Length: 307
Length: 251
Image (cartoon, rainbow over all chains, first blue to last red; front, side, top):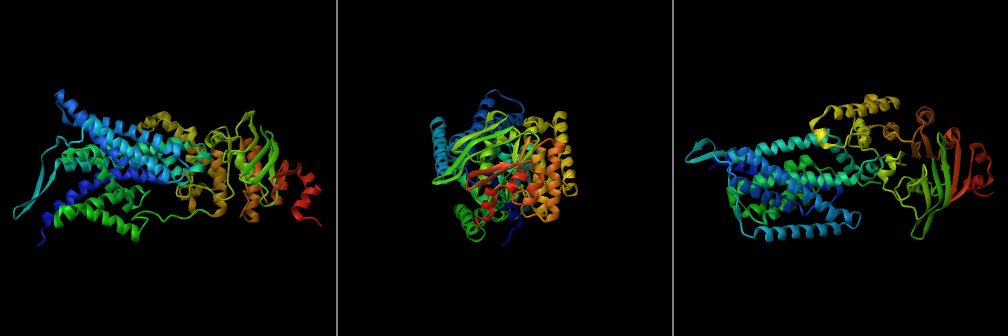
């Protein structure tokens, strides 16, 4: 029997997680677009974003603040700053010194960076799950049928709204700003950009920083949504976001947004109609299928061999 | 203003450029010619920072520039084009010109986000400069087209405009007339002369089209098999026996 309210609920849940995936996926896709490599430490940057915001929230809670949005905003800004510096450091330590070498070398150094960051958080914060206070509660209920209610929580609305704001700002930044223009130029022809006087090292660093800042936003949002974080928090989310980026077409920013949403919805329907055990199976099967039948992804352009 | 001293470039066992010297004075068009594979483009690549030469010196206004990062060289006023068109083909025509002015713009991201008056003024200035050059090369109506969709001759002119918005002192053109029809070549000819006359830019040119070379060059350097063969005024080069031999083979 098909219950449209149940369906709607799964859709809302899926879009919530999916929009957060999209935020992380943008980091993968931007870095790939500009240097043609995957930043394997990106999941850890997201995890660090979640930890930073938790620490800031806990610290501020001790001061007994009155206004919740301010607490969240401060936490968000701190997380973005810390994660951005991590993103910058990853580029400086793991990518720039080995740029121009064989492609496997930055891959390995990035994985090393990821292991380092993961274990650093293990040491500093302990390996146990830490509860993340859900600061935003309440929600709207609409539609009830035979005991089932469709609910959209304020937390979910916050995730949608924040993601929407971030995506809009990013799109404006890429299409309008001077640095965004330079990013597009560097991703199309790095050598020529450099010959025209663009400092390509700065632009590459900027893409790592922007991707990391968005991952931090996702870290705060998903940390609150799931209610607990641990040092391995970034691993699966990173893989999922990577899948989303490939699904949408790696290198394409709208593709990352679309891929994230599709993946989130696919997972949520699997969990809702099959079993939540199959959630990961379905998302990674999607990855395999897309690689087999449309390697450039949904919105990716086929790679044209340069002569 | 530019002086190349005993430039050598070795790729493994191949000595592509061997002891080439040349110089460019202010307000001058200097051509590099030579048979295919003579090493002309390699000389260019060394001068623009694309390659790090294995021997010799390149002095620009008395400063050694060999092996400097290419964005630094271009910021000193030395800008080049390539044999094949290298536009940012998925950006619009005007964006191609704006991105080339990156270094002239305020690098402050905050100013950009807040859209401060000084930022807007600078944006406006670079937009004006872009419009001026689009008009100059006859592409103003196509400003919002994607660069990759332009006709070949238009792409060539856009490339020169893109160099010019960076306000170079020395422009290096690698076979600018390649693939152009005689009409377009004549227009290009006029454009290059006007760059020198009206904008006070010195030009180094690699070109196979001899009529173009002889028409516009003040001096010509001939390279053969990586070695300098001759240099001098166009009329001397035309009469030079070694040059004729290199081009036509020995009778």
